[in-house]
Image (tube, rainbow, N blue to C red; front, top):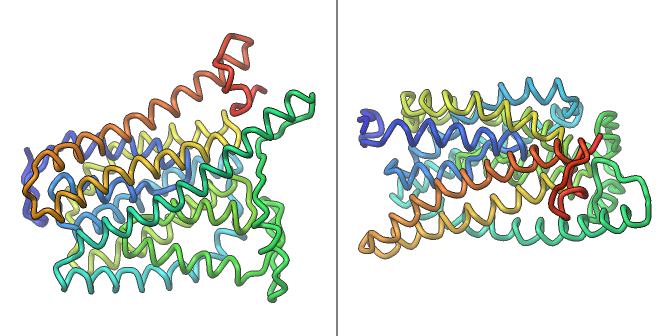
Length: 355
């Protein structure tokens, strides 16, 4: 056990490094900072809610820089789209941090953070899972008919609606191959920025679905562009949390050690799969994180009487990240096998890139 003087607790160094590594893989793959998994995890490890939020936001900023460099090399970043969101993101993060400090003053930051996480993640899981399953079936049908299947297939009609909003200025995002009102992008930045500042996350678990289902970017572009945006929201959020005394820098350093390696692998793994595979992992990460946060919330709401809930929350929080990492690694392995004509499960060919 290591004593973190600023946070005022003792926690195992190994758990922090492991958490950073696993969430680095997941974050680099699905384009999120992973805060919706890490913030509840840090609370489970014993960090106060406001401190968990600040530590996670700071670690996210460092990890995002590494992942951004890799996604840029893979051609997954639309700079126009990303930079257009910056203003809204900065405004949103500021409001989110102020909201967090208000709950901190009330002494309810932990409960409110977990409750908000459960509600938002469960809602996003349901929508993402439904749309991705429909896309998966469409890919299988196209393959059966001998049609060419690209890296991205979506069935959502949301992007077409939002792209028709005639509010000037209208921007052309060449890498993402979309034309949309600047105001749509700015509003997405504001909303996700508020969540980033309040929940101590990069905002990616909302921003990636928003970029896909509202703005209309492909999943790969949404992932890379969101990582770029996380550098901004994470950096600004880290600064604001540090000013408020919400950051234990030693805990941050331990997490970044693991995250730097994990983020590299996760980013590279996106080149082996189609868009629906990434969205599947995103939806699974949301529901697993929801269960972990719900267990911890139950422990806190029952006055910390039932230690079994706390124990299950720890086990589930670590288990979910390890499971997602293994799932991502399996997709990469199956993609390589399929490319070389070797046997793979029947559901794999429609999700991986074979050339």
